[in-house]
Image (tube, rainbow, N blue to C red):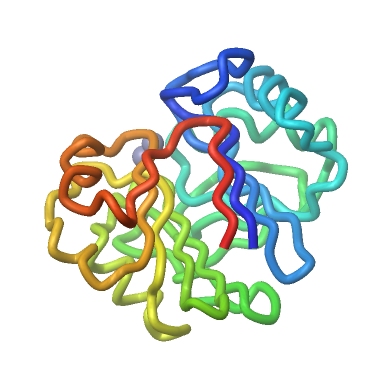
Length: 210
Ligand SMILES: [Zn+2]
Ligand SMILES: [Zn+2]
């Protein structure tokens, strides 16, 4: 499995554009899923090009929640590649494309799941791997504790990757093997200092191979 961070508030490589928002490409079990689309479609497509990701090869888009910094790039992306989009139930966009509204936990494919919409706002993507479950999150508005609990019905959580907005229950990370705090995480350096052996600070251009 591989996760490529495409869109983030920070960048690792200088030819990428930093912008408040989040998007990553999840390649797992033979699928290519774009998780969130950042705030701006031109920046999303620019960064994809710089990372040698062909947008026409993406098979599905998974939107964590309807905040502009996660869904803003969607319409531009769908113009390039009109694929199926999974959105949480409460999301009123997009219109026209093939949209699957998710409320309950859902199996997208063999070994790939949605937690379902939590707290009426956000869904997370959970991928089974040999090491355990890899949980990809947008902003973690429902709370990391609730997300990990919801995901754990699909397996033992091993990794969490994405925005950890307002998160400070650092003990929750102690049983995980990998944490990649991105985007809106307040306490990135604190998490890195507490768990240097398992923390990869997320920035556009970072590639995580599991
Ligand atoms: Zn948000
Ligand atoms: Zn956000």
